Image (cartoon, rainbow, N blue to C red):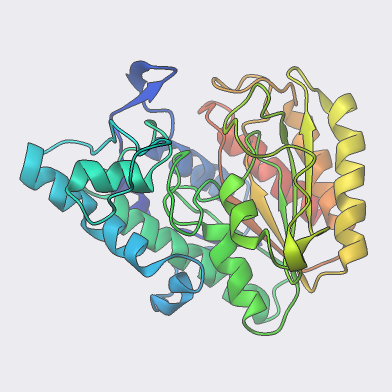
Length: 340
């Protein structure tokens, strides 16, 4: 299996984040990508390749142009006002207040962000833009006949919607790749297995019938992102019936996860996609520091093998997963399970 990777992700290195109102060291850190790359090389999964460069038009099919411009300029504007440091919003236009996307950096941050955990650093835009190239390069490999490819995308993307960032995500890599396929007349299905619901991906495709979105995740009644991911969200307008959320309880292990997996794969099979995109979050692991599922290392081999039963060209995209000691092994377990 070909892996697409770029060292540009190393330039995105947030120092701290606000977690439940407390300032703590960031868990979405460069070591995540490096641990996965090292495991891919150690286990000889396949070649690790640099991405091609794709035009902005591929991103603007998914993301609002003003939002993309904001991301590209935000850290510079923050530096003008506050000097060096990571840009983190401190105020939001809640009910009764007005959005000011073209205001000063504080106004714009609050208008475009939905949490305090997703800092914009000096290297964030370069890394996010390159992650889109990584995703599109893997998609192009699928288009050229590869059975599967892995996009080692960092920062991750599935919480970013067309004009909102958060959840450590800035550009939605899975959505950009799915639209790449859809623009060529193909039917993509997106299967999100991250512990946290891919609210951004859902929002982007919620009114569309040409892209299926299926997600297994922690119930937002207790888990981030709290405001989307419930089972009654099934799509709207033309997209009614093309969104499936399978929220699960805290403490879910493989015995509880497997029935939801069967339901998800059945729905994907019924959609009969031309290509499958997997938002591969690994924070379902039993020892993940910020999550509450109980999947074990060997379960990821089974997950990969079950995804392979769909017999579709498959693009895996790296999302969450924050246990540095296990992230490489469990990521490659999914990919090897798929290949076996």
